[in-house]
Length: 305
Image: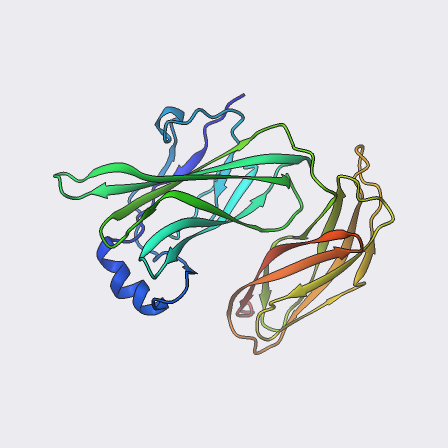
């Protein structure tokens, strides 16, 4: 059954803000990524009409939760199967063009399945040469990804825009998402998938926490495979250690998908700087490609006693 997907209308940045704010900050060298400036949103949660989303026809839509939008809004959608944790613009500073949208996604279905997801984005802009300003679709983009529906951590996903946008001459108004489940998963090579559970961790200064790191083997990765685990990119003042840097895949569930659970202990120094960092967790096994996912580690002030 088709389901409409919730999205947010975002106020992003005005055309006259980019040259003074972003280009001066990032220079005119190679293409770099940056978060769009957080400013006040002008809309609330709204349902996207299928016919109004770039003229596409969508089936088997996946409920999406936009946890943190480009504009900094936080929106709760019950029973979401796909969380859009973060969205950032990617810009080519040589040409001052927004070329794609980078998403950080978190598949969050209740049942583990290997799925072929299709991601659509639609960017709306404002024509300010008329009164009142007219909203129009200035670019769209799409991509596909074969991913498990749960327990794989945070995954970066880049969606190229069909038409690059010049924010110095065009005011970007909002960004919408639609995610669909294409049902037919293509035959792929054997693969590992690794993810922290939870994938967003809060540590108070001086605190220690232990989390699970879950590994699955699909498409012919056999039970008994030994998988090495590592974590990189920790926040300053945070240390990490695995209970065992190697885990062994075992049959899991009725589908007998090989999986293993490792234990990762994180400790924040009492004077660790406050802030949020994307750490990378990697699984590797002989004969199979490595897999990596992200975990957001946030260091906070201790709770007041």
